[in-house]
Image 1: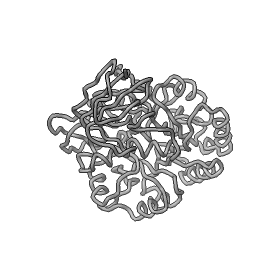
Image 2: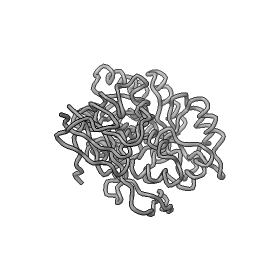
Image 3: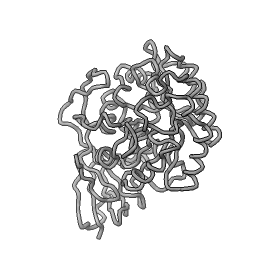
Image 4: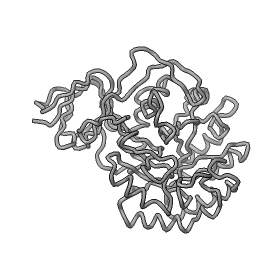
Length: 380
């Protein structure tokens, strides 16, 4: 007798490459069986023959910090009901408030929250620019905090976060900020998650050339000139960076996704390595809700195959966060029963980018989410 048996009409697993109709047996919060035939009885049975059943999502760039950040949101309230079971916090916490992040967000949350520690010692707690004063980008303090986090062992530290935009730097020299970020990253052997400056302030080519293999450039489909497309073509500098191992993240946000830019890049075969929401406080009252299902909808309407999309919201970001030797994940025996059912709209709907440009496409929504085999109820 299983705790739960799910009849999936169309399961798609980027981890195992399984697809099609499956029965999933769940016991003790983990997947106990995967089969083409019904494995037996369950105390509860879910009929998920309509839609796509997929492993829970990993959002590589959002702002899950319940208290202490001007951008932060409660991950269990806003991210988990959208199918996100694992998320990377992009710089909300710095050297002086990472313990608050640990105690108020990581500890109480069901959603599994990882950290890209902000180079700014106060993270995103300051209402003004993050690097309003260059001295806040304190390399020694950042390195010391990384050592403390590693000793503490309660926060899953992925890397460091730095944003050189005018909004984050104010009048501070962005070149000095990035230089200090690279020094801290080298000293700690950690990758960087980088939001870049607009090219008319500092050339894209010079910025991307400074990044190292394993570093991640976010906001890649931004309509501003910090994005990867210029004059209707993917920048040579972006292609060169990818060739040497720099990774690219979508970082949709409230102003960083353009259908025109995305169409151009997709047409040239340049897909982001990870698809992320950059979900922050401004998204909390959006209708339809912002989340990875809305990002999935936007990419699908551009003709990107669903298999490629799901890979970039599950296996790829999960592997970046936890490494190739990460514990079992996906639709396989022994993995946590973290599952999401995506349901399509009956007809194409208007989908908007962050410039309010419209494309018609199927809107996917997370109709059912399981965390460790337990249904996630939306509290909104």
